[in-house]
Amino acid sequence: MKYYPIELHAHTCHSDGDFSIHQLIQAAKEEPYQVLTVTDHNTFAPYAQWRQEKLEQNQQDDFDGNLLVVPGIEWTTFYGHMLVIGANQVIDWRQAQKRSLDPQLRQIKAAQGIVGIAHPFSIGSPICTGCHWDFHIEDYGLVDFIEVWNRTTPDEKYRSQLAYEWWTSLLLQGERISCSGGRDWHRMEAPSENTAISYIGLETFTLTEVYQSLRQGNFYISLGPVMELSFQQAHQNYYMGDNLLPEKGILQIMVQDTPQPRLQAFGFDPKTIRMIQNEQVVAETKLTKGEPLRVPLELVPGYLRVEVLGTAKGQKNQRLILSNPFYIQES
Image 1 (cartoon, one colour):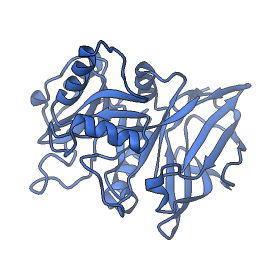
Image 2 (cartoon, one colour):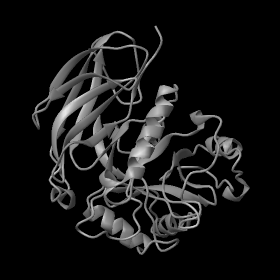
Image 3 (cartoon, helix red, strand yellow):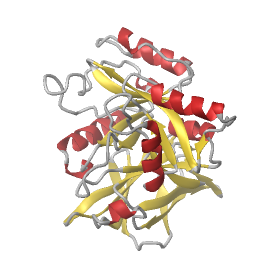
Image 4 (cartoon, one colour):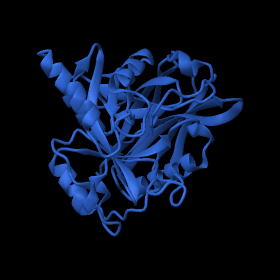
């Protein structure tokens, strides 16, 4: 299993971004990302343009050079924004009702779409009508992830904490739902503005595998540092989103420094790994960057997730990495 840097939320001039589709792709290569999801507001036009140009060159693959390009859209409504990734048809966002989004979510799922709630605690009306999440959802099993970290300086924003608390409250209610980080990339940010980055686990570097890992929750979000993470039970390795048994096992983790030059300037320094079961800290250990750690744990039904804490912009004990959960089934 290898983890690749992925951007899940990006815009072009087909909606309110400054980039052309080619400029966005070039900027992603320079970052460097290895997977880019194009999610303009209420339009697939930039991806369609890119795909048509490839077909005209007799190219039918999903790559632009070494960059894997993923089709998506950001539903932009009066009651919230929502990322829809990989759907094989367009579902009409204009039919969505505030009192229940479930009918449209079922249509998206029938079209093989992946659903992510974008920036749920952004300022809403009248400053940014629709940016705050106001839809009612009955079945959160229809939602794949919540964007916990959004746009620039997510580590400094109170709305990040609100989104984190909402996500963990849903986990405690028994929902299988992931967290994501979205750059919400419209243009190049100022050098003083950091953004989160997501890393997705792939066995094979393909679009199909990206969809599978997003549905499973085999990805994590970071302010910069990277990690390898698995859980060993009965001599088999499991990854985020997998089902585990309520018995003993070994958490395997290694954390390394930030590889992206743009983010290295912020000095995010990982110090501690925290293991959390059902929102209770069950173990905490100091880390040495680049050295593998094996931590024995006794699991109980529910879920297990990991946070890496360290120094961020001079502040100690800050969250630098959030893993998505492993799920522990009933015995």
